[in-house]
Image (cartoon, rainbow, N blue to C red):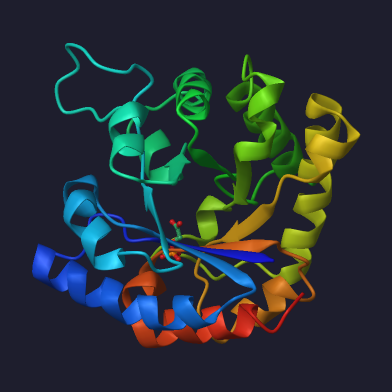
Length: 254
Ligand code: PGA
């Protein structure tokens, strides 16, 4: 079963538009019986969108959370609050948040907190560029993974999803998407680390998604040749026609 996650980032500009996107995405998600679809809108829309999602197969996710349940933390949102809204997933450690100063230590605390409240966690890792020495990007991702999972109890392994997102491949300024081969190589390294960290079975079972400039033309390559367990999609998650094409496609792949 493939997992297709849409990261809406700070979009769209109004609740009305957000409802429109979600209603459109719901159509494909409802028919994709072999694919899990998750939409991650801005926090402020989650409460209202829960009603729009209704009892559909489409799950809601958040784009971030804090690592405490409540208290004097202006502007933050806790995993407990997200869980109380029926949110099932949370993205943690996205490169756009890391660029604002989020550390691996923050990320690991967020994972443990989200895990405690029963949320599924999409942990993002990825190297900044590939211009350095041969193979340096492998070491970067391994170190980031190790530090981000530091102190995360093994009991939360079943709630974990890893998104490999090479930062140079993300967003409108991306050089290009990575290749399916890039993903496959990195996924092997990630899997090896997860097995060492959580044990053979729980480590191997953690899905690994690809993210970065995914669209409905290159998605199939990542899911087939790239052996990705799913995709984390930014810009195209707000273009329901394209996003739905990807969901339909993913549903045909084992
Ligand atoms: P993109 O973003 O698909 O727009 O490149 C991916 C992401 O940041 O998760």
